[in-house]
Amino acid sequence: MRDNDFIVSKTDAKGRLTYCNRIFIEFSGYSEPELLGHQHNIVRHPDMPRAIFHLLWKTIKSGDEFFGYVKNISTNGDYYWVFANITSSYGKNKELSGFFSVRRKPDPVKLKIISPIYQDMLAAEKQAGTRDAIAAGTKVLTDIIEPTGKDYREFILSL
Image 1 (cartoon, one colour):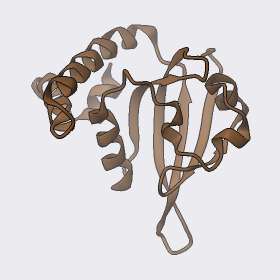
Image 2: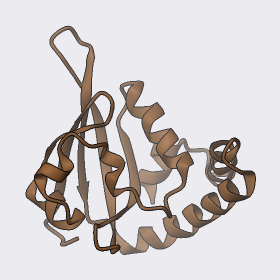
Image 3: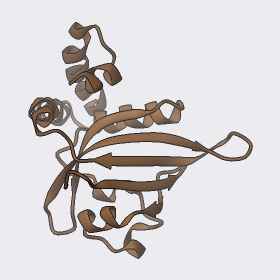
């Protein structure tokens, strides 16, 4: 991503894209019709630990903001990293209507910290197998963050 780029998207409550800006379209390689109505995870890179997405969904469904680093994949197989901020959106009756996400270019120094953590999480998930993958990945992350005395959000924002 370029320094001044912001990828913006909105989804419904089930994670289906309802809006994506031109920067999202450019980096994903999809056309707008190919994106709208599809799950946001259409750009999920296979190197991303499942535990991160479990944490993401748990966080935003509770109404809290999620901050995190995400590796996405383009239609041509290239990848791009983003620093994501995802928030819940609410309708007239204060019911969850969807999610709003703004992503920007991550600091390369911080990616050098995050990337090996994600690699360790992914390795633990693969070793544990499908049923226990999220717990195994979460344990790797918890073992890294817990000694800092911070929660996940504080850890990510302090990098």
